[in-house]
Image (cartoon, rainbow, N blue to C red; front, side, top):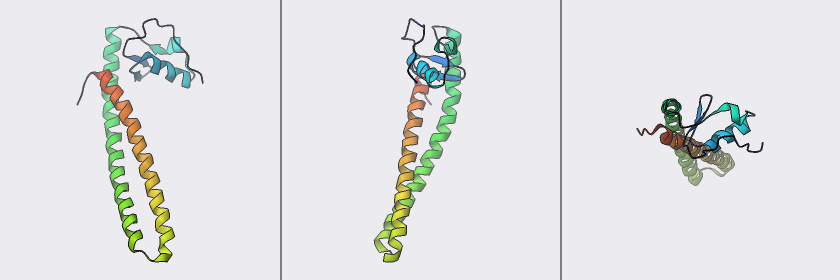
Length: 139
């Protein structure tokens, strides 16, 4: 879907809201609307309105708490997978030749899972950083 631009003239306000989703820029809110088939002019709440800013900050605080829990779980998963990778690597150095193929497959699988989990952590961190800016509240 192509990016649709909204009717808003002042593009410099550092927050926008679409339903219960909050964004650090109008462009990000427009992109979200474009990706989800929403009308950018009616779905986006945007402007230098103190009540809107307060609501965006409040939503960001709650979303941050959820994302911190997700991040914690992803970090635990990364640690577990790192242990698996180390174990399979150590086993490969002393294994019976008939076990080598099995252990290599398991090692590759653990590395792939670890890579995917690390990428998920990076995505969560990116969203969390945006929410930090929105909430103006660091914990």
